[in-house]
Amino acid sequence: PLHRHDTDYFVYAKTIDPRFHLDWTVVVAISKSVYLSDISVAQRNTTIYVGIITLLMLLISAGVSRWMLRPLRELRDGAQHLSLHPMDPVPLPMSHHPIAEIQDLSETVRLMVEQIGRSLSEMQVLNRDLQQSEAKLLQFLELAPTGVAIHQPDGTVSYINTVGKQLLGLDAI
Image 1 (cartoon, rainbow, N blue to C red):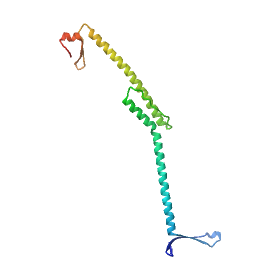
Image 2: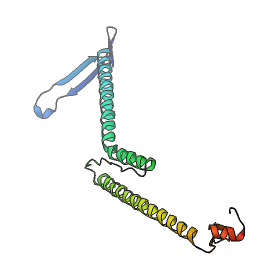
Image 3: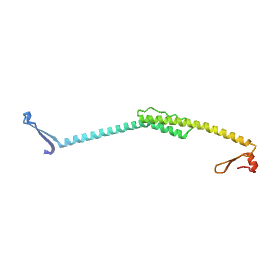
Image 4: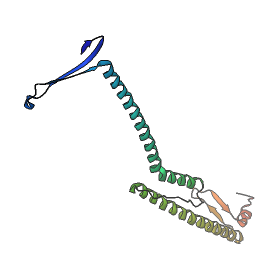
């Protein structure tokens, strides 16, 4: 540093390479206050640019994240609908996704939901058939001319027809 007329200067001196046959020394002197203010302006501008780029990257990341997670949200919503309304068909809007793993997951869940829907439909039919068979059996047992009792594996009586109740003198079991 050089101090002259109440001003500090940064000084840089460089001798020209003798191969060029010049006997020169180049001296650069710049006011310390001008140099530091230039650095301060450059630092402020760099900070602003980094802030803007960071904000843009956050916005882009948020958008990409929402785009990437959309199929998973659709799957979650379909699964929630299925858990709350198991007898309703679940329309799963499976959008195409460029990431193979997410597309495979979407397809697998869609197939599982279809299978669950078919299984529920089959169970409804089987349950209805079972109820009809049980009603026919009870009707048959009530019309039987002999007493009939049905016992559980632990020995408790779960059913006695009307003739059986009359024979045992029971009003109810």
